[in-house]
Length: 430
Figure (tube, rainbow, N blue to C red):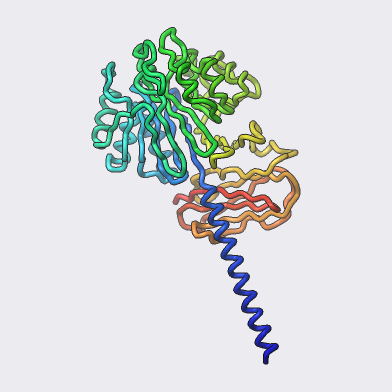
């Protein structure tokens, strides 16, 4: 009797211990999922115009600029819908030029004024434009009842550790003051931001310039305030009046994004700026080809679509179409189905397309042959589908995920390869 009881009791204890270990594992996995949340910066392809969507790890949203009239209705609003975004916490108008503010009234009116929390711009300081685009923007922004003038040095907390600091606005630079002749053009009055998330830093500044021929040189005093960054949005579409050497020497970006339109009449981006960026060992991404210059060989790419940067606050990825590059480490190495014949690092790419309905593709890189477990999990950490449970050779691999039997929502995919693991999220939208 004692022997039988002892064996039964020991078995029960072992089962309880197993349950505790499993529970602890799920807690650790849930924690890893929470830390896997990423900051997303979407550089929207709106042609010869500008629009950038920022989504923090907590889901807080900020749209900086809305492209030209028509871009809000035809490009930005459908894109927001595809991401499941029905509310914008912040809208920013960097300055009052039509290629930056033209679509913002369309976005506000489409979402509804109750679904826009705050609108920031430079205020009503002279000179103000006298045109339909400005009138329509101002009417929509005022209709929200939450239009505010951004203040120099103001910090916006986007949640999850993401901070946006205003370093330039209305012709002034933080810790410097008024820039000489900064009323030559509306461009001189643009709002400049420094985004910080963990060790990751990103700069964006509308159409600010660094040359005094036709515009004010905001970039030179701004350079010291921005400092070293990982990535930057190039000022003024890469015009010859932007991205001066002092500015570039201070920022030292690994990657740069240029919003530009194919066939534009301005000659953007210019060869001088492209050469300057390339010489600084900065990889250049263009939303479209542009007309002014050609990216030096091996120094950049033309996306012809939206370009998305995602970061955990440490390393980051840049995605356009089916191409993914990761920084730092194997920077400049695209995971495009042919690269990585002799991979040196472990990498899990963002699924494509994302959002998706109902199928999407997952890509990953293995540095050596190993046992792989790739599975899909719901928000409660429950495994809902196993995609791979096998030993896999080194190299670049791709597998499909069919969610036809699953409800809409956020899912996570987790790659376990020996002692290495990575987690990313994806969005199923019916």
